[in-house]
Amino acid sequence: MKWMIPIGTFSGTRFTAHWSWGVLGLLILLGATNAQDMAGRALGLLGLTLSLVIHEWIHIAVGQHYKVKLKAIILMPLGRSLAEDLSQQELTPKAEVRIAAAGPLISIALGSGFMIAAESFALPPVVMWLGGANTAIGLLNLLPAFPLDGGYMLRGLLRFRWSELTATRWTNYVGKAIGYLSILVGFATTGLWWVGFLGVFIILSSRTEELSAHFRSTVRGRTAADVMTQTLSILPAAVRVADAYEVAKATTQSLFPVCFGTKPLGLVTRMELEGLVNSGRGEIGLSALMNRNILLGTGDEPLDQLLRRMANDRVARAVIMSEGEPIGVVKLDQVLQSQ
Image (cartoon, rainbow, N blue to C red):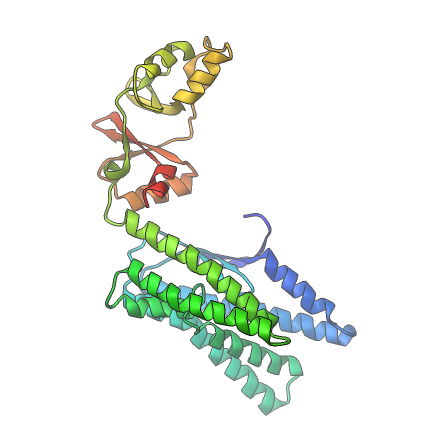
């Protein structure tokens, strides 16, 4: 992903920092008044980054206990972005609460440890600063609003009674109330502009999480056959574009598997065929035009599993097979529109 700062891989999860984290670090360093202050700020920034990595790593460790894997974590100044492995089982409400709670608890523990050590051993001021920063991160993440850990904790608790989608919506109501209140405080109080920024961030993130929950509820329990567009006609790879267009015009299909026998080699749309014919290139072979970036699946394949394979192979369409013949096509944009 562009504009990401690589940190490393821990427990099989890739850690990167969002570009905004680099901007924040630069602003912190630019505020230094002398070389000694610059060194202290750099040390504090490094310590804070490592503390956040520990905060997220504890989420991973607890998640692994519940057989949940995270492919990547993107650190951001507020919250984080998780890339989950959809092959894993659905999170139970108890698992969601425990995984989410682990982060704030470890941050508060780290903060307490830094502050006790700074007081007990007369350590440099940066250690006390790290203690306060970690404690603040832990307490901030307990707020019941997405994308903070407290939002996932609240949703997990609500899921003991309601579905994930309903629990997400109620959590969003609480989160948006916190967001709007934060914006009011940020505008009304001198020096607390960052509180207003936090409110805006929470409100924008709430919509994203609801869409994600809606998508999960859409694909859960469904198969590829439930969402595929049935294929009535296929096109032989050896024919000319003009001949293929004549076949396409006689059907209501917009997307055609291009096959050698019954083996799919690629896909072509009616619009692509029409464009070539109208531009005088109808004599070229169909095999030169087709999009070969396809994936094969079966009608009884779980939809979430098929979508995961499509994401891994970076394809937007999958040809569905039955008894060695294509019977339909699953299009990613169609699945998204069905929410």
